[in-house]
Amino acid sequence: MNVSVFITPVLIILLLIYCAKKKVNCYNTFASGAKGAISLCLDVLPFLVTIFVAIQLFRISGLAETTANLFAPVMEVLGIPKELTELMIIRPFSGSGSLAMAEQIFSTYGADSYISRCASVIMGSSETIFYVATIYLSQTKAKRLLYAIPVALIATIISSVVACLLCRVM
Amino acid sequence: MRKIWFFMVLASLVTLLFIDPEDSINAMMNAGADAVTLTIRLLGIYAVWLGIIALVDACGLSNKIATLLDPVIDFLFGKTDNNTKKYLALNMSANILGMGNACTPTGLKAMEGLDKQNNSSTASVAMIMLVVINATSLQLIPTTIIGLRQQYGSTSSSDIILPTIIATLISTIVGVLLVKLCDKFYKKHKKDDKPKQDYPSTKNKILKNFFTSKNAQKGKCTLSNTQKNQPNKIVFKDNKK
Image (cartoon, rainbow over all chains, first blue to last red; front, side, top):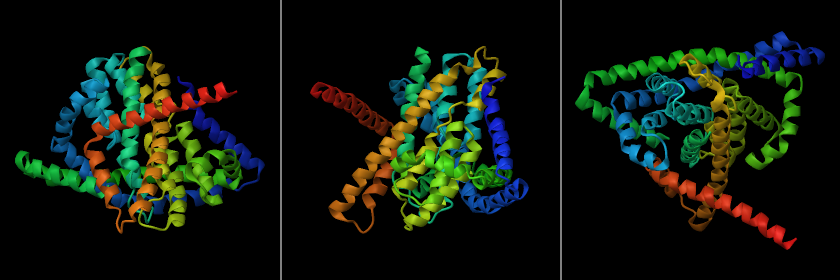
């Protein structure tokens, strides 16, 4: 058992106790808050469909793999094992896709191998950038994000390089 | 974003014409169905979290967190109204605590507030900052991955926690620094030649996305520069003393 599994439930318990102390009507407040999810999801859905179509086509056409192979030498220079390039390309687009890929890496190389540990750290320290950007923009009038995505990508690549370095040392 | 999408779909469809044209339309339909399933699952998750967040708000805790994180928020997002500040604070604390599913609803609420202030078709710095912070993830304990490692017979499944924390901190710090840097650069650019449309920036965006590898090196340079500069400054100050 991990300590981290206790964080969220304990926080919620503390929150409930605090609410009781402040005499908040928990039942009604919770329900009215939950109601907001409906409009939220209705706003998000069209954008999710749009981005999912692109991701699915990108993967099924084999372009993801081609791009991965293209970038493999560059990644090698940066110290990232070439087995991880496809994971790194899929990661910004799809959480479940990259998780499946990580599983594949675990099963082929063993969970304690250097490559698997690199994959774990990369997975843990990065996010599905395009998905986040899509969802966040779905709520706004502003549709142009300027440099947000490149910046996030650069930051993720740098952290991945560091992650592989750390895995070698630690 | 729209350009990346356009090129991704176009290139994929053209490639599929040669490999498996039948599959392309199937894939698109499946993707749509996947998106709907995900949204329905998200609806449940968001509902629970928004309920909890409503509780946090009702008992006045969110105000307390907001005042606690006030200096950080001021530095990252500049001036915002109280309500937005509250959601920004909740979003950041959810990020740090690794409650990934709680980040999105709070972040979206904050985004709405920032958007109202901004009131233009181009995102403001604060909005970009919010997206970058959430896209670089501040999750400290990667529970899913640890579970997966255990499942695949790892003997020390949690030894990746420390490297993950370091890597995630680095990605967020680099992200924040780059946003600040880009903002300065962008503002200068705008003052210089006041373009009717901001073509240079969109061009850069495409270039950057197609040559991420090149930029990785560039980004690395700026990072090492800033890292080098800061210790130097401190050394100089010490010498003066």
